[in-house]
Amino acid sequence: MTYFTENDPQTATLQIKGPCNYLCWYCVGEKKTMAHPVPVMHDLQKLMQIYVSLQRRGAVGTTMYANGTEPALHPQIQQIVELCTAFGSIEILTNLSIPVSEWLPGPANCFLQATIHPEAEQDIDGFLDRVQEAQDLGYTLRIQFDSTRIEATDYRERLAILGIKLKPLKLRMPGSEFQRPDSIPCPAEALCMSGYDTVFITSTTVLCRCNRNIVPLHKPLSAPTSCTHSATCPVRRAPK
Image 1 (cartoon, rainbow, N blue to C red):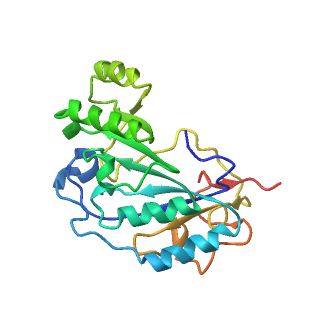
Image 2: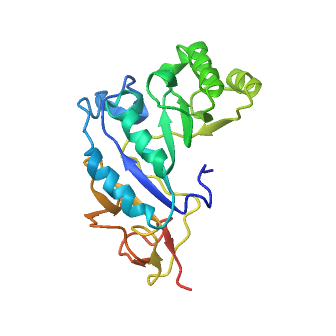
Image 3: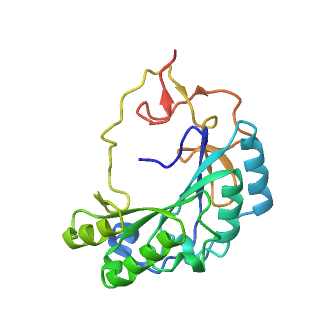
């Protein structure tokens, strides 16, 4: 499921790195240490230039990539969200441990995917209160939970009252092998949409084709082109 529509013909994955207030096993692994205790700051002027270059083909649907990071704690979160929503929409994955009124500029073009982490279960009433507050402010939310651990019956019922369907999520340790169940092999000559319809922006504000191909781009590609990465990459396409 995605929030992006034909109104967002391009998608950007925007990486941010910074601290998190949780130490969930499937994120920090056996080391049990914060991945990015010191936030990496974006060059906001450069980020603006990247989005201006993307805007030439229309609106941009941004997904925030924040592995090991709680976006609410990043010092630039409001500025980044304001910038992204000026060019399209943004979807943010959050643990929702902090009320949205304290870290987001407003619900316009901003969508939230909140996860009930193990530490969130200790304050499930507070979590649900924050869900209610976000809804009251006009945010669209999707809620997910660790299907390998949590008995979610009560959560389903309580979220259903708010009109939210709980989504199960099978979590795994960092670095573990994972194969997309819907991956379909593409011909070797298939073109790739990354760099054209989809782009990846690193935490240091570098525009790249994707998170597998982080060679810097000076500007988005003018057309799909060949790629040597996995033949099951979801952004590849067979030639016409």
